[in-house]
Length: 82
Image: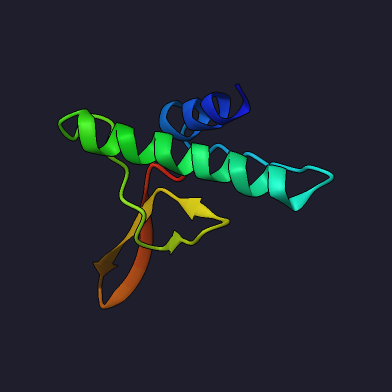
């Protein structure tokens, strides 16, 4: 249930921030795996309609749907931002 809520916030609410905490790191890792699978499924199976580029931050514990755009020689972070 938690994973689907996080996936929904990531895909539907611009500039959203979600924080996942648990007593045991095993629960955090399993839930994060479910969240990342849900996000990847949405990216791969919606014909680009819900695709969010994750160029700036895309690690095992943190993702952000932004990418770099070069304006006047400066890299600027742009995108959905969740």
